[in-house]
Image (cartoon, rainbow, N blue to C red; front, side, top):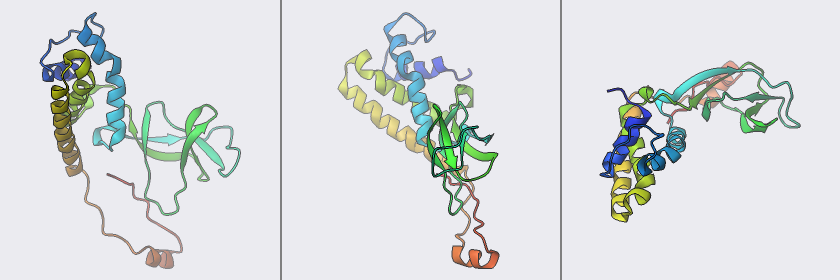
Length: 203
């Protein structure tokens, strides 16, 4: 069966030993508890780590209005933006802040600005299975008191969450390329006359 928001919430309810739901809009206490915070908890877990399945790219156009001072341009981020993956370029000066009512990257770099970032993934089919288990634990932990009134069960769920989080991050890290050998920055700059490290930071 394909992973869905409902199946993730039902996995959470199963961990709590309570009845499953048919829809997040069910008129039941269980549905109301999990649906009220599911999206927020999903986005929080996505933002916490550089999940491979949530990485994406964009080429940003500059805002027509420049920042008031310090920076030459502001680049509004995409609507699904959750976290920036900064390039490990030496001397990089990108600053995230509100600009004209939206979140933007302020910089002196010319556009278009190519970025990598963690996106708000709303299609659970794209989730890594280890992330699904971790997210279900967080949903269960968050709703445990309202559904079971058991602090003992809540502590057990948090322990299970920590274990699944470790597994998810370990699996995610296995898929990353090995880091290149460190380069002598002084030697590179002397030989080329400029700083050339343009790799992306990964966790």
